[in-house]
Amino acid sequence: MPARHRGRRRTIHRLAHNDPVNDLADLLTPEGRALLDEVRGTAPADELAVATRLRREHPAELVSAALGQARLRQRAAAKFGSEDAQRMFFTPNGVEQSTRASVATYRAECFRATGVRSVADLCCGIGGDAVALARAGIRVLAVDRDPATAAVARANADALGLAELIEVREADVTEVDTSGYDAVFVDPARRGGRGRIFDPEAYSPPLSWAVEAARKAPRAALKIAPGIPHEAIPADAEAEWISDGGDVKEAVLWFGPRVTPGARRATLLPSGAGVRASPATALPDPEVRPVGRYLYEPDGAVIRAHLVAEVAEDLDGGLIDPTIAYITADEHHVTPYATAYEITDQLPFNVKKLKALLREREVGVLTVKKRGSAVEPEELRRKTLPKPQGPNTATVFLTRVAGAPTMLIGAPA
Image (tube, rainbow, N blue to C red; front, side):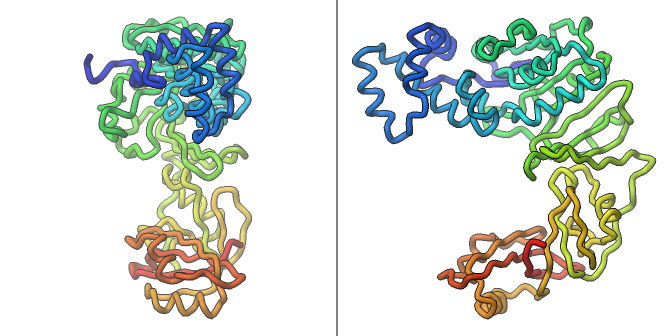
């Protein structure tokens, strides 16, 4: 089997060591569905005992498949919510690589708000994005080359009552005619046999193919890795970085009539707050200032989108170092784009001095954050608080201030 398949988002994995297509077919039978209900919520420590008991009345392969699917559903609850996860079907890679439901819902609403009523979802995986699009009232053609993955996507559309809006097709995405759809969404595979793929041209399909497919569509969105180099972003796309609960989840390249070429934006979920800059409005790098009373840690999406300058201006702040994305200011401002800390101490990096200060302040719980430092947080905690005692808490930032290794001590504002 070739190492790479265009249009194949998920590598074939065996569910509980069986053939995934046959496993799914068996689990969709009345006996399989009843067994799934029976093993729901089984703890890992109890799997052997449960399997032994159930194999007295059911085929061993079906019991293994049901327990494997129950395990995947438990993992998927963090992304899809427990209600949907317990009705859906998954592959191991599908759980790991599918879009978080909150992000998929946000993107589906972006499509709907621009008048999109039909989307060709290329490299659809287990169908998470297709589900979100259908729930927004959008008709979806969901395409994946892998037979097992396409079968799971089809089962999920049916399980969630969306089969009338989602057509699942097993095909090579490069051979699919998308001309009859209002928009195209492409989510290329960014993992291979050796793990995460960092070269966009090593995606499957390559980013260059996805970009050309997007340019041919009335509107389009390409899901890419958040760490993509900005120089790899096409000049005619608008790039968006999305975080959820403070964690950066993905980046998206948007194409279409309402897009500002070269613009960058950061969107923070669940609030939906956003900051944006176009080539005409982008600000220069903030000035470097001495550390003030407050330190602001920008959201990861803001940093990835290179919008720290815009947030610094909003906070009337500057940088503590030209290469470090920490903003300092003398006033406390409430902002969705950064977390504020009140700084009480600024010290050159010195473990003994930090240990003495923590003992003096009776700190029993220490949070260590770092940016621009090679020191491992857990190692510092072990050296400074070998036996945590004391009722107080503190946060230490291991960073650079004007080029010098520095420790900033404080607490959330």
